[in-house]
Amino acid sequence: MNPSSLPRRSTVHQQKKITKKRKKKGFIYVMNRVFLGVFMLLIVAGIWLYFAPSAQNIRYLIADTFITTQHRYLAKYIIGEDELKTRVTEYNTRFEHMGDEIDTHDIQPIVQEEKKPLVEIEKITGSGYTGFVMIVNDPTKVRLGIPSKVGTGEKVSDMVKRTGAIAGVNGGGFADPNGKGNGFKPIGVVISQGQLYYNGIGGKKSTQIVGLDREGKMIAGNYTLKELTELGVQEAVTFQPRMIVNGKGLIKNAGEGWGIAPRTAMGQRADGAILFVVIDGRQVGYSVGANLYDVQQILLQHGAVIAANLDGGSSTVLVKDDEIVNKPSSQYGERYLPTGFLVFEHPEQVSLPNIWKGLDSKDIDAGKKRK
View 1 (cartoon, rainbow, N blue to C red):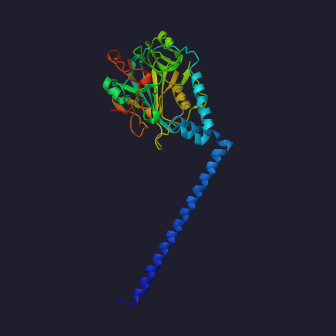
View 2 (cartoon, rainbow, N blue to C red; view 1 turned 135 degrees about the horizontal axis):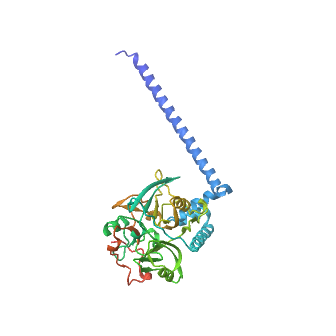
View 3 (cartoon, helix red, strand yellow; view 1 turned 30 degrees about the horizontal axis):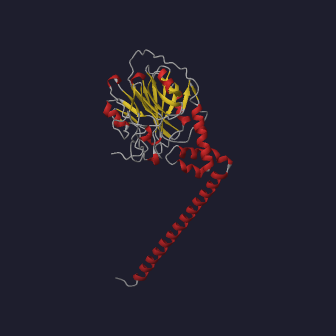
């Protein structure tokens, strides 16, 4: 080995080390600049979001989206606590009034040359959302599913399997303390097979219901229990708002759409077919969700003459042939619920006993742990 080559090799090695250090310092410098730029951008965006008049609609959109979740309190950090209370009160008042107009629609079944399948499912996409429209061509085949055990709700997929239903979607809302509800205490009323199974409206004279009468006509809006009996309502839950009545949409624009979230809604066409819209949400890269205006427009485009909102969020689910069609947003999977609208080939053969019979709604523990 030529000793004279050693210093040269050493010099080359040192040069490489120096170059490597320079590259590392350069990388660190660039990253520091990037982080600083992002940090400054966030500060500017935050100032704009909180103080710029032009950002008001975005502030309300973010706040409304929080309001639809189990973390409603977070909205106060966007619009303030007083504005949050005002916003919720305004929504509740508006939703109540949206159920006041008298519905005059009637169903006129069309005789088809070729018999359609009882259930058809169409995939839909829009700006930021993916979902499905389930068409039930015979409205008399829809029944309200309820849990089989006292003290706990039931997954819609389990309701479908247990009862032999063709398909099902989630129904009405339920008491959900701290997001840990057991799905057994419904909000408002539950009517199944023409009987009042659950009455949780207390001293209120009326409640806004979503359901069907004995002829398969959809009933939605504000009604007293006496009126529901006189109308022959067979299957119903309490929920709001009604979005379409007498063929017209009641939500004027996206700003009145109550934020972005997973959604479930029910409507009916003039020919009697029932429309269930299920929109997935809270899943970046797949489907963020939709507002109620989006859902209303989907229903109108599919011919709905009446339609109403059902429970959404992490409760949103669509089941067909014992398989979950959509992608529920709950990190714990499908939720336990008190009600679900189910579709049967032979609904007259289905037994759905009243599990709330003899129970006082005041004594039901909405948060008791499921066994």
